[in-house]
Image 1: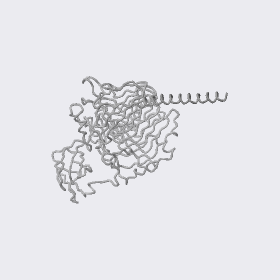
Image 2: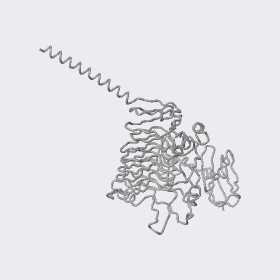
Image 3: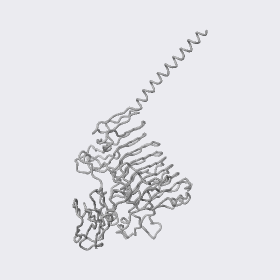
Image 4: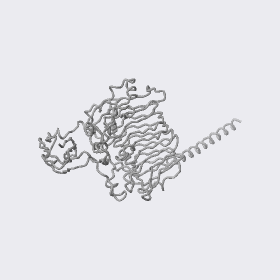
Length: 517
């Protein structure tokens, strides 16, 4: 009997071990299936590659180009794309490639399931040069979209359009630029929720700049949780953070430069008064803002943009600068005791996008506005030549919104850290260089009638000089001059505002405002 039990126990143990090994093998196969990597051949049309098989991760090669000939739709499985290859190469580019000129690709992705994108560059300036309207659309309820280390540019309407309720959107370490076209400032957004209720919006360590309308366009739906932390936002035209009704709001450690720079119309009739503000959250159903945290932010505007804004529009409406905070935001700041942590410090960024002075002037005069100015970054020669007919400059880099370590903002964060985004390519110099001060450069007379004299009293050579008119167009461009003095002829230029930009041998640029009588 004892032998029987011994043998039985031994057999049971063997069977258990056998079952365990079988289970481990099955789990191993499931894990391999869950981690199946699909290396996508450069130059592929992604519509022909992506399937409904669950558990796949599609790897796109850095430095390569991929095409989309219709919105990529997926449902019932997680679609995961990420970059691979040499990290020194540009992010892989996904570009819309319509089969004919009469076909519009209204999004690169139309997500009906979870979507994960890592290290990808996406643009809606198609291979034909046409700018289509959206990059990512959420097309089902309660889905999750996560993007990390991605570059988005050139969409006619928005980066993210949330067409269904309950979406969870997480955006980290990304660069977003040139959303919307300057002749239609009503239509450039980063997020557009179309009035649907939203579960979560979390933005962390992103650079968002050159947006024609606003960061978020809310159509009246409620947002359960919204967190904007450690972002740098620059040059948003009509509005900025028009958050809408939000239950819990966290707005911390952000730098906002020139939000709602087009200003707002002022009317003596309260019914016609434009009430837009830079940070503009709406109330929740209870009207309770105790769950909002608004602290450690820097919001400012550049005086040169203020000076470029006319006192009245062509229709004679008065134009005023937009307040930074709405009344509810002020209530939350007061309730939280965080007023002193929110500062107004004008920062000189390392290599920012040029200020949209020409657009400000054109907008208020109801004239055609100039396009976004890319000065300061170079086109990517591979993308430019390999996409379409090669006639359109395309960019894989972005402007540098680092700032001096000597700035108050550099230690103004919740943990004493620099506020605003801190991306890999940002430069935070130990001091801010100003060539006009450093090289003791004189420019006179100002205002000028006929001739502007530029002198470097220190003898430091000036490598380049560009004079821009009020519409942002270069009217004088002298490169590689290597001189310490020059003259600029204004006699044939119309009266108005101009910008004088000087460059040294390292490419450092400094700018001053010039008035032509």
